[in-house]
Image 1 (cartoon, one colour):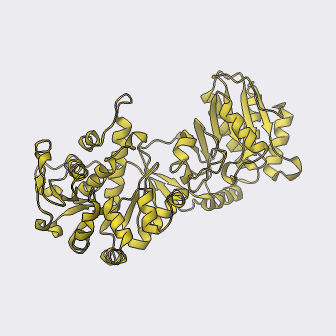
Image 2: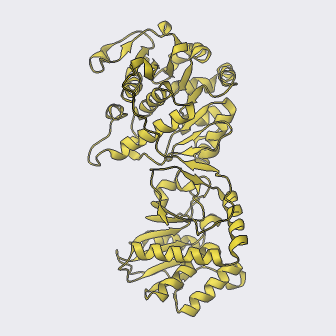
Image 3: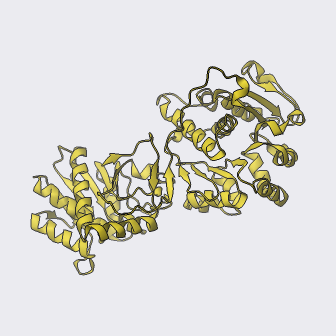
Length: 481
């Protein structure tokens, strides 16, 4: 059993891949063995999390997730603990493995209750074994049980998935359990790490249940940290590439400056700022390392170009040249909105990437919805699919920002970023990310690795930030390295 930490990459498997993996494992181990292993893992983690619990309340649903909970109750009972099972199943319609675990729990003397406990203390534990991978919107007694878990006043351990969380998408379906810990069994599920997953799952643990059967290909990846290569002594500023930022229309100069400052602190050799709507270099004193240019004077063929940060309506006029000439192009903010509104720019973007991604797009959910001609709600309902759809449509690397930022590239499994927190929910942090992507790309990373590395470090900087201090975008830009 392992706790999931952001120090390495982890393969993620959606429901279909997990079902295939489960079938392989059962064929190798035999019936009921996997459920017995799952129940033992749940009981061991429950004991580790709440060694002084007077009561372990286990809410068990009508399927195999409930069977895992029943199996855990048997172990806890045998170890001299006091599990209480609230079982919402029907003995006449139980799957075979769950029926066997029900009989084992009854034979072990586990206490069953038709009502939720009303006197749990902080040292106790509640185990959510209601639905798991077979999740569906809860109603009736199931919904009442979920509400009772929310009121129980003690820590909550979810078995495989918090009930109400979609395994593949991270979407929340109506009533949902908010767990402090989740033990994902056999495989790690993408929904635990994006959308509502980070809020509902708490700390994620993983047990592969000793399955040695052939592993199915990953549906997605939880990204690990970027490689840290030492800079050679015999190098110079030209060794790390040039970044330029075109944006910062009047009233929004700060967005372009933030992107440029982030590129500077992320290691770019030289950084240029080319404001739109007339030059204004008042920020030069704060960032003396930045070089200011007129947009038309930049040789875009030699640059990693960030286009759009604070660009307003002015950005549409410079996009045709940027799409035609930029060696490496990061499209953010108003540049994405301009592309969404113009079929000609979309065609030019697709043609630009015909030989492979030479563009990174960094939309937030609303910008992604505009590009896809859909709604923000539908993007958020399946963030992985939305990011992949954008990547495949435009041939670009796509960074879909949000809780569990998704990085997608054509023909590849998407990557979910494990770092970041709500401190990033403030103006300008997206501009900082765009500048970081350009810096990593200019220094020699491929576009997908540049995007993944920048997103990881962007989130990690927020994770390191002192809890009692407000994180501003300018402070984040300085922490980009």
